[in-house]
Image (cartoon, rainbow, N blue to C red; front, side, top):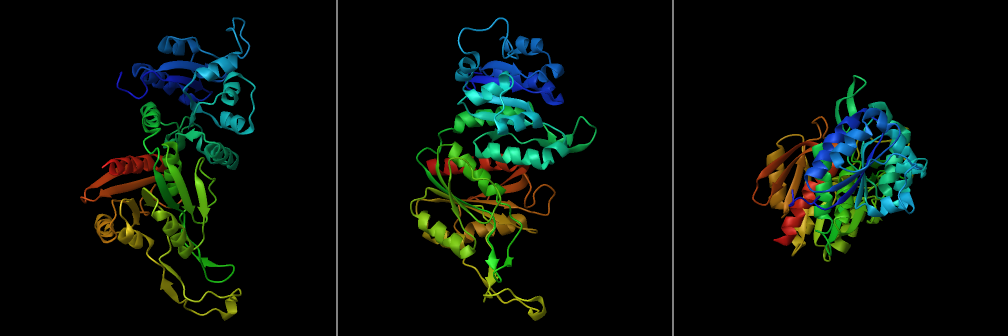
Length: 402
């Protein structure tokens, strides 16, 4: 397939020891069928699940699995191979390889290549739900993301142990689509200034309490990360969040809606696009207490006042900017999102209902409607927030070009 973004690319393909390795054969065929050069490197455990002969037959190239083979190539083996690659993909990526990557362990050829390469690294985790949700694995993934490793998030489905849950490796077609998108999008926001907001705002009641919401910031962080990967100059204005800083992104941290408004207003005139993914509080306490409110002295009611509508103000000010808003609704989703699109002069609104399974705050997935200026809703179905971020950025690229 000469028209594929993968055509002519050199893919170093790591396979580790998980049952999902059976999917690796299909993924290699996709890569080869689209004109990529594929060089497979397997861990010792990986060879127990799928044979090197299978992968050699599919890729028409010797499979690498020994750090010190009897017949070795001339030169420093791991450096020569690492310099060959345009991208390094590990599918499946076990909890073990993620832990080794985080620690910088190099005890076999694949882990040595991981330390030697300067190519982008993509990993497709595959493991039991308990292993995936273990604090050590979660921490390892957060640190690796902060270092710039790209994660192709696993799906929810039947696992080898007989249970159903998250940890099922992304399907080969999805992994290939991520790689196509990476090569195609690597520079489509080059020279563009992108402002993204993320997370909640905290409106203080007193020095220790606040009004807030359940937003984790994941959606905005994924958008900022994706925009930077496409070559954009990105500023992420983040409310309180425990997420690691996306690589290559300038971070501006705020707490209240007023602080977020100030930070956005300061950057708006020079921005090419503003994506307001933050869940900004609609109300704040009228008179925050200077001292902690004692429970025995608390009144039955808290007096509140509206916060400034940041999106409305931007819509009134905008000239050349592309402006994207989010609409979280529990009823009348399409109608309410369409109203916001028109009233606030948006170019695109991303609407979702947090009551739907897999679409709530703090999840790694979402179910959204993308509604453009013509009012046409495009449903996404249940997808990862990373995939949704790419769909939003695709729309922004088209809007900027037009």
